[in-house]
Length: 120
Image (cartoon, rainbow, N blue to C red; front, top):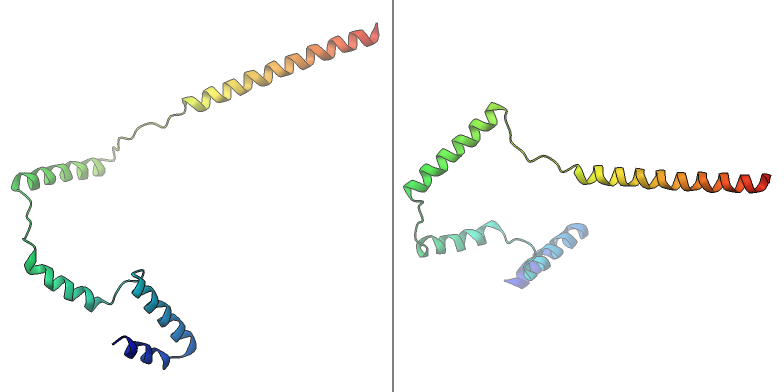
């Protein structure tokens, strides 16, 4: 069957052949999805093997209540969110300003002393 696929690919135009060859190679490595009919065959095998799962009635009621509450909050326009932490930014800004001020004061004091020595 595999050789039949490759023979069919050789009858394509060069760019189509390159794409189809790459896709087939990726399918062989498991990196490209298989055609739908392959999944249907596996699905048909699983239908009888797995038991049907249903959610308990109380879980469904709680879920419906929670979803109704969320829908009500969204429709009311009131959305509760945590405030963004801006305090660290303020502290960094104040610290940088204080450092710049201290450097400026040191520079002014040094300049004034140097100018006084130069004049005397």
